[in-house]
Image (cartoon, rainbow over all chains, first blue to last red; front, top):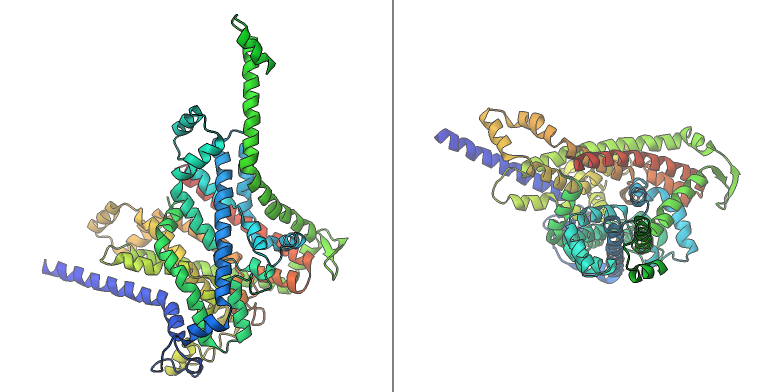
Length: 276
Length: 318
């Protein structure tokens, strides 16, 4: 018996050791980045990483000498617009696929679904020309317009709307509610959780856009943060590492906080899409 | 409208023929309203997809069949000439090869590390939710942040790795100029960024395994390693398949990390497919060849997505 408790205790110890080592590996890039963001650039360049003075000077420099705040505001606005519009248009389309009977419904559904097979990265040339022809280069509208709906969002919400009991639809029909009223008063509130999940996903994917903003933005007052960092990097030409690390930290900390509080929705979204 | 009025005023029971006529009318009217509503609800999405996905796809195919001149205008119909030129161009074949190495490297590492993390986190100990949060934390990291963190780690002169190497009197590695090391550094940064997602999905799959399974195998004296490979892996194979496909698709579409970390270099070692398209189209103005490359990329992604649909279909039919 004593042997057994000894064995379990040992196992527990090794298990914790493994968890801690893995955590270190995952966190190391964060830790290195955050630590160096507190050091003077001279210390970083001379390899003097420990024992020097630490301060928030790099953060102050990043906030005052670079347009990083402007980049962040741009990113937040672009991601918010994309998210709200995607929630609206995807839920409308999903509603049509679940609650409206019309000719060739399945055909349209597969048509929408088929767009998941076509990568946006392969279509940037005509899309660039389209946005240019609309006169929307270097504008919020040009950044949001191509992403106002998504096959993934429509598919996900369609699955969610199918869970709504048909009796509810019948009851609303008897009450004389129109499609629009039923959509606003019943369907959207009923599928709140799925809408939150899509909100989290669309926000995050807009936030992480890189190729499209790189091609279509030319000025700091439109440029989102992902491309903004590229701009800083090329201007500073790797010299001011302390400030670059501080900029990276300024960007990653809010997303980590959002992720921490939103992890429940990410997980439920993953479960809907992925896990049996 | 007239017919319905008639019905109300008539006292005799309508014949079957009249009845079905009325039925048809109302049905048709309902269909017309439905069509209006369908247009209202679905129209905007279909229009957006048509303008920003279907039209560009057709345009890309069209462009890929012509030769373009210096100002980007189509000149001569080339048929499949652009494709033939691509498949015999050493630059493109090298890019295809680099992409395959990158994709397979990213896939293998993401899956292996994801499984290790998911396995470690699924044993119930105190504070396990704390470790779960850490393991999924890289989901909050965007391309530019990941690139900056790793650029510093890999930096040949002041980076952490070479400082450790110098401290231990190991040979210094030049990650910026050595093609193989550049590829490895890009793969590592991508894997680190992907890992949070892969971990979460695999972990959820582990959670859905029946607990009794572990107890039974423990009683039968099956070791944890044997159990992992012969019981757990087969049971979560659908999820493994799903994560693999997603990882493949994302890796084939990689652009941002390449642009930030290596710009395709050194010596084109990390010039992956999307970066090659970007260079051809937006730096060299060679739209027709870039379009042909885009079509090839689309075929690859479409095949992978098709496999993913097959998986989802099977899942739904369970």
